Image (cartoon, rainbow, N blue to C red; front, side, top):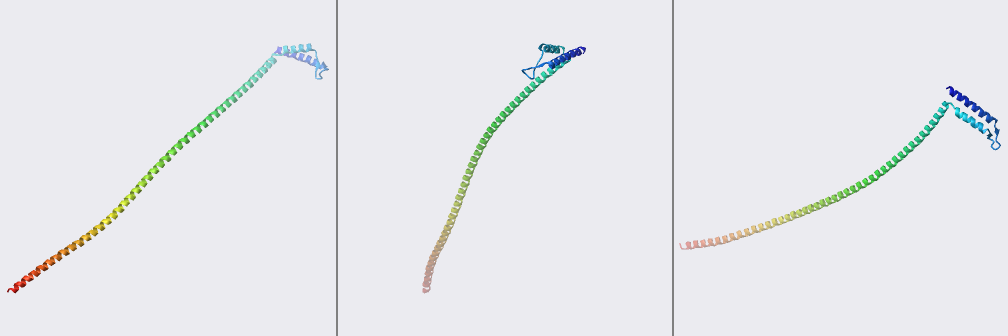
Length: 212
């Protein structure tokens, strides 16, 4: 601590000498802001200042320099971290955009595949429905044709039945008439023969009567 006080005194003395030199210096004719000083004196006093700086000042200067170095390194690291973070973020954004585009492309492909499958299934169902409708129409036409044919057969059978019934009625009537005619002819023949027999009997009776 005493050495720091002595060093501080020497420094203050050197500073006073430098201040006196500057106050008493002649103004420069070339530069209005400049002045002419004793170079050797200035250098000697500056060397004394440097040699007699207290350790605390040197340590403080070292600390300040170290702090400045740390601050610069920290700032550099901060910039590097920010740059790395920005690069990583940009890389993540690019990767996410790439993945998103791939997902969109895949979704488009999947959607196209699903649309193709849906169209194929729809076309297959339409074709199946058309075939089923055609089959049902054919069945309906066949059934209708069969019903028409059956109805025609029934109608024809009814007509033929009516014709047979009428023919049978006519034949029965004809047979009845023929039977009656035949019976009438038999009765007429019987009546004729009976009449002849009666006449013959009468003649014989008359002859018998005549012979009495």
